[in-house]
Image (tube, rainbow, N blue to C red; front, side, top):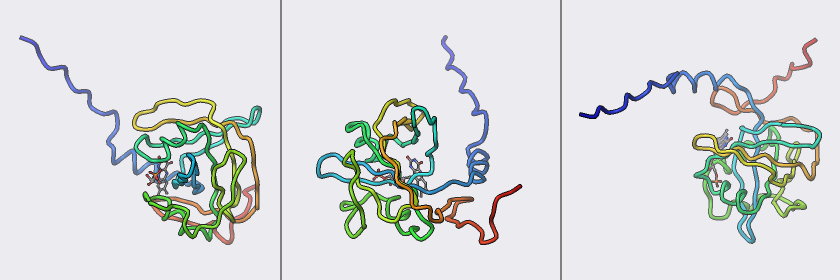
Length: 172
Ligand SMILES: Cc1cc2nc3c(=O)[nH]c(=O)nc-3n(C[C@H](O)[C@H](O)[C@H](O)COP(=O)(O)O)c2cc1C
């Protein structure tokens, strides 16, 4: 008689994991992509620098998103770091929309991706590596263009959008 394989207990409870991750403050970005006439953007906090030589960043993207297909197919994406006054765009690009850029001020990058006007910084990338990780793919992009405005960034912390404290400054 065969026995069912024992189901391994998860090493941590999902609720505990989520509670811990709520403590990770992050800048809010919109990752933009384009395939022909199809433009897309998705709000994302799972973005970080990888190396400076060569300049590379990574973005962690759910495979069920529209953006995932566009980035995987075209090999290009742009990370737009939102300014504090752009919270409406963070909400907008966290949903699927038929016309995501209708009424949204934007220009065009050298890879053809839309670039959001008034973003604190924009980082244009060509896809170099992809790694499967659970429900997501880690896209590693080589940076082919940057622009920086130096404005105050929009933050996400403890489940909500935040701004830097007015009294904030360097800790010495
Ligand atoms: C604050 C915030 C951060 C998010 N970060 C990510 C992320 O890093 N990666 C991801 O795949 N989805 C993330 N999402 C969810 C996507 O924005 C959401 O699934 C979006 O609808 C995907 O758009 P698309 O299907 O048009 O590509 C985040 C949502 C919010 C509100």
